[in-house]
Length: 276
Ligand code: NAD
Image (cartoon, rainbow, N blue to C red):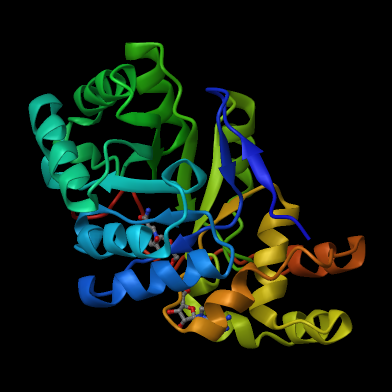
C-alpha cells in the first residue's frame, strides 16, 4: 500500500510520514537514514541544532535513492536568526548535508524575545527565490506570528511544525492553520515514546487492528491530514512506523483517540515562554 502525500500551498508535495532524527548522534544518523530509506521512507526531518546534518547527508548518499525522490527538511537555529546570519547558517547546513538544495527550510522557533523572525523570514524568501530552499515554513509559531510574517512579506509558510500527539491535539491552532492554508506537521508525534503509548484506549484499538500502539498513533496523524515525523534509530521500529498504510481507523477509533486530549498534555517547551 502506497505512502500518502500532502499538497503544500506552493504547489509542491510532502510525503506524509517522515523520519525524525532529534537526539540521534551524528555518527548514528547515517545508519538510521539509510535504514529508513530502505524501508520506504522518502522524507527526513533534521535541524542545525541536532548536529547531525553530516550524518544525515551521508545516509542519503549511502541509500542510493535518487535525490529528487527524497524530501529533506532542515531548520534554522534560534541563534542564527536575522537576515545575514540566516543566509550564513543556511550555507552551513547545505554544506554539512552535502546538498545543493533542501526541500524544506524551517524557522525552528519564533523566539519572540529576539524580535528577529520577520527579518529571518525575509532571508527565507530570498533562499526560496534562489531555489535553494524549495519550500519554506516555520515551526512552533502561533497564528499571530504567522500573520505578522505574511503581512510583512506576502509569503505564507507552507507548514507549521508543532508539538502534536493524542495527549496534545492542538485543535485551535490546527483550525487557524487550515484557515490560512498552512499544513500542520506533528513533532513528538508518539509523545516521545512515553506513557502515552501504554494508554489502554490505544492498546484496545491496536489489538483490534492487529497493529502496535505506535502504528495506531501514526495512523491517527495520517487520518487527520497531518504530516508526521516519528523518530527511531531501531531498524524494526523504523520499519514499523511507516507500515501504517494497510489499515484505517474507523469513526469509533478516531473518537476514542480524540478523547485522550489533555489540557496539560504538552511535553516540550511552550513557544511563547521558551527561554531560547
Ligand atoms: P517521538 O514522539 O517521535 O518519539 C520518539 C521515541 O518514541 C523514540 O525515541 C522511542 O523511544 C519511541 N518509539 C519510536 N518508535 C516506537 C515504536 N514503534 N514503538 C515504541 N516506541 C517507539 O519524539 P521526538 O523525537 O521528540 O519527535 C519526532 C521528531 O520531531 C524529532 O526527531 C524531530 O525531527 C522533530 N521535533 C521537532 C521539534 C521542533 O521544535 N520543531 C521538537 C521536537 C521534535
